[in-house]
Structure formats: C-alpha cells, structure tokens
Length: 242
Image (cartoon, rainbow, N blue to C red; front, side, top):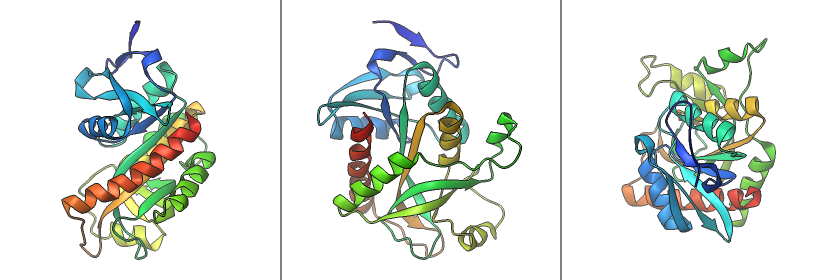
C-alpha cells in the first residue's frame, strides 16, 4: 500500500483505494452512513481531519463516498484534490436544499443543471466574463432517466449556491425566485467550476428538506425517506460512470 498525502494534508490515502466515481455528501458521518447502508464491503480510505472516505461496490462496480464539508472553500478543496491527485473522474454531490420556487415541493429531487452564486471563487481563472458553472450533461441525463425509472419526482434547473447560510439581505430570496432559482444550497457552483476547469465530470443532486417561503419542513423520518430516494438515483448514476 502506497499512502499519498495531498498538498493540503487533508487527504492521506492510497490512490488505488479510491474509485473513479465519488459520492459527495457534506457531512462525513453521512458518508459513513451511505457506505454502510448502500455499498457492499466498504473500506475506509481516509480519516484525516475526520473527513471520512469509503470505497465499496454497488452492483459489482466500485464507488467511493467522502464528506466534502460545508461551503465552497471546503468542498472545492476536497474536489480539487480528488480530481487532481487521486484519479477521480466524476463527483456526485448528494445533499439537501431549501426550495425557493413555488412549484418545488418537499421531498422533490432537484437536479442542478447550473448554479447562480454570490461566490467570487471563479475570479482565480481570469475568465474574460462571467463563467457559468454547469453540470456534466451526460451525468445529468443519466440521473433524470434513473429518477423516471424509480418514480422519483425530479426537477431540473438552476439552483443558487450561497457563500453564507445567514443572509442579511431579506430581499434576496424573492430575487432568486424571480429569476427561476429552484433551491438554495452552498456547494454546487464551486464543484461545477472545479470540474469544468479540470475537465472532469460533476453533478449535484439535492433533496428538498424545507421551503424558504412557506416554512414547510420535513420531519426527521421524512428526511430519511427523501434521502433514500435521492441515493437510489445517485447510485444508479454513479454505476453508469464507474
């Protein structure tokens, strides 16, 4: 076994123990739950900073799952290192989001086609304009087909990736809704930019747990059921690219 430590010292793992496709929840303990619940014979490959990463099999194909942390700075650090130093070809974010659009309901699955954001992350590229972060189309199409097959209600469109959880601008939500944003979250834009820059694949799948305007929210039991539906779509998508 040859352990490679990443430049940030956030990952220390044998590259051969990480699959080509990685599921990417924010919470490292959720990564542990995913591995133990959905993957066969999961093996722990990273424990640095307690950002747990596991690799197992799904229908005979190797798939990894690793926490990303919260927000663009954390998620892009891990995504960049997985893509650049550990041979990962595709990352699928699996997370929750707050609905903004009137037509998006609790338990819906939002498949993020693109992500508006207030992050300045892409300034580093020196792109002569506004670089729109977008999903890998083949992965998006595969996820939508999987959702249809599994009878999961999926909505495809724009999300908003926020740099802050608490926004002092109380008019922001209404503006997001006016421009067709489906849901709010905190990582997708960064993940998509990283994948675009490095010519890798990325997709963000989001389970709607609450609604920003109606105040509706899932119970703990309902959140778990909604997460299961998202995971089934994520696993079928990962399987197609593993």
